[in-house]
Length: 88
Image (cartoon, rainbow, N blue to C red; front, side, top):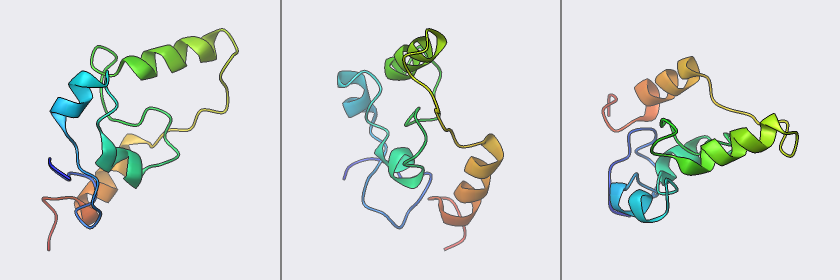
């Protein structure tokens, strides 16, 4: 509800640094709801998104598999078409 919508301005979920800090990187709802199949749930580095670090570790040891993610080109295209800074 509170935050910015860089990926899709047409949906309610927003990116919120405060929620992400408290929830160890899980407050990136605009990204997650725009790309729900992306296991990372955000476009962040490991130091900020601890959950992605754990999931990648589990993939390394074989406990997680078939992990899909949005390509940088797709993310850029969606931002350009539907993001907060796109043509309204």
